Image (tube, rainbow, N blue to C red; front, top):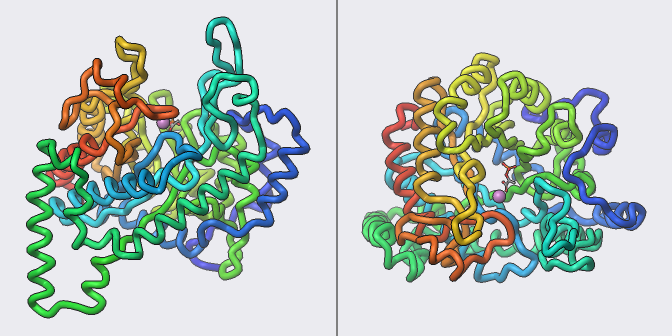
Length: 459
Ligand code: PEP
Ligand code: CO
C-alpha cells in the first residue's frame, strides 16, 4: 500500500455513513428511484484518477509547510446551463490570479477550482415561502431547479446522472484548456478580458504581463527550450466540490488498483460544509475513509474540541496535505476567534492547510434586497486571517473564493467600484454573490502584498 494511503478502521466502508445522521439530504419523493440511479452511477467510469488526487495531496503538503499557496475558487453553485465560454472565463480569471500571486511573491500556486461538480447546496431552511406558497428550497441543479413551481422544486434523482455528465464534459474542457496551450504563460495578455483591462487592477495586470512576455522572450532568445519551455505551456489544475450528496459520492468511490486505497473519484478534492461537519455525522464518517485531500469549513461557532475531533477522524495519521481547514469567520470576528484554534491544532501535531474563505461570513442583504458581500469586508477578513496566523506562528496557506470570469454585479466595491444601484443590472448567481473578473484580479494584487509581508510565505 502507498505510504500516503490511510488505513481506515475496520468499521469503515463506502456505505458505513448510512449508520450516521446525514444532514442536508433532499427528501427524494421515491427512495427506490433514487437508489436505482445511484446503482447506475456506480457502474460509470470515474471522473478523476487516484494518482491525481495523491499528486494534489503532495502539493497541499507543500502548502502546509509554507512552500506554496492554495488558490481554491469558482462558483458558489454551478449551473447545468453553464456555457463553454463561461467555463473558459472562470479558468482564465483563476489563471490570472495565480500568475499575479506567483509573479509578485515567487511562491508557487496550487490551483483548485470549485468546478466540474459543485452542484449541491446546503440550505438554512428546507422550504421557501413566496406570497403564501411554500415549496422546497432550491438545493442546487443536482437536486432541483430554481424556478418557483412545485415541479421545478421537486427533487429529481435523474439530475444525478445529468450532474455526472456535466462534470465529465466540464472536466474534459478544463483538461484541454490547461494542457492544450490556452494556459501557456505566453498567453498571459490574452487572459485579460476587455472589461477587466479597463480597470486600475487590469492596467496593473497589463504592466505585469508585458514584463512576463519580455522574460519569456528573453528565455527563448537565450536558447532555453525543450522541457523547460514546455513547462510554461501547461498548468496543473484540480477540481473540487462540497461532498454534500452522499449517495452520489458513494457511487463514485472506487478502490485504486495500484494501492488498494479508496478514492472518491467525483473530484480531486472534496470538502465538508459548515452545516455538515458534525464529528459523529455521516459526512465525516464517509470522508474519513477516502484518500483524497479533504477540506472542512470552519465557521465562528467552531470550538477547539470540535476541530481536534475532526482532525482525529479525518487525519488520524497526521499526513501533511491530507486535511485543509477552510475558515469563514467574518471580517469582524476572525482576529479574535482564529488564533486559539490555530494553536490548538498545531499543538496537537497536525500539519494541515489553513485556507481563508472570506465570502461566507460576510454576506448581507443590500437595501435593494439583493444578497451581497462588500469587497472591503472580503479583504478585511483575508487581512485578519494573515494577522491571526502571524500571531499564532502558523502558515496562512491559501484562500477559498466564490468568483466568476463573467462581468457580473453581485459583490459591492472593488476595482471597478460596484454600487448598490448597480447590483440589479447583472446579478446572475443561482446562490451566493461572486466576485467578478475585475474584483478577482484586484484581490489577487492585494493578496500578493499580504503574502509578501507574511513571515511564513516560504520565500
Ligand atoms: C459554500 O461554500 O458555498 C457554502 C455553503 O459554504 P459554508 O458551508 O461555509 O456555509
Ligand atoms: Co456559497
